[in-house]
Structure formats: structure tokens, C-alpha cells
Length: 208
Image (cartoon, rainbow, N blue to C red; front, side):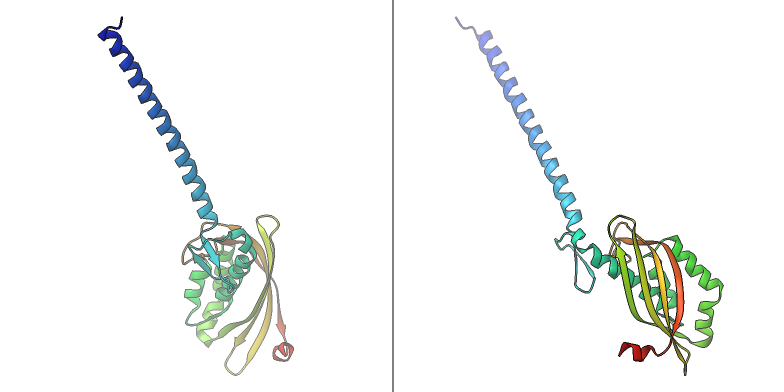
């Protein structure tokens, strides 16, 4: 014989079962949702930028960064060397400010050394123009930090006289957070060093 009390007990047990089931299912759904969000976030971090054939980085394009590491590294090195070595009396301060975003303290130390030696004062005093003619880099991408060697050919225009030089620089590249527009490739030059500098005779005839 069923009593109202027993019916109430059955209803309470059923309600408890339903509530626990809802809580468990909700918890599982939330856990799965968090996992999916985390996976999507990591995939977005690795596939949120595209590198054009000129080496420019365009955000919000889905492409694997690792496939473009060599393109980005070479573009980063070319951008830095062009900023650091293509200078004149009007632009050197702006170029140095941008170049220092692309390298660490070793780049800053070299800049300060050149400044102390009066290089930039001579730019101002004699209205010199230092123009980059070519940049060729080799990067070892086997392990990070990545080692590189860059050969930069530049000319110094002294009015009626133009001298051409070949400079070899070395250093390492490491990954850092991308910074738009200051460091779009997310790479940083470390241990930067000017190895050899030599004057080139008849550079124009060599190019031909």
C-alpha cells in the first residue's frame, strides 16, 4: 500500500537524480567547450598571419607560420639591414628608432658605438648619403636561436665621390611576440656583430 509520504520520497529521489544528471551533463558540456576553445585559440595563434612573396606580414590570414619561417627570417634581416645601413642626415634618427625594435641590446650597443665615434655627426656635417645596394642573407633554421650571416653592399655618396663597400654581419634570430607595426615578423636579432668591411672597386661593372 502506497502512502503519500512514500510518493513524496520517490518524487524527491527522482528530482535529485534529474538535478544531478543536469549538473553532470552541464559540466561535461562546459569541459568540452573549454577544450575546444583552447584548441581553437592555439590553432589561431599558429595560423593568424600570412607572408606575402615580398616578405610582408599580413595579419588575420590562416596559414602555417612554420612553412614561412625562412621567408620571414630573410625579410626581417633585410628590413633591419636596410634601416640600419641606409641612412642620411635627414632620416637616420627615424631609421635607428625602427631598427632598434628588430634587435636586442647588441644592436643598441653598436648604434651607441657608431654615435660615440662620430659617424652620425659626419652624416650631418658633410651631408653624406649611405645607400644600400644589395642584401644577401643565409639563415640556419635547424635549431633556435637561428644563426645568420648577411652580406650588405652599400655605397657612401660624398658629393662628387661615391665609394662602395661590402659588409658582412652575423648574429642570431629568436622568436618574440609580434608587434604591429614595429616588429611584424615576431623575430629579434641577438649577438649582432659586424665582422668584415671591405671597399669594392668597379662595383657597377661587377653587376653587369
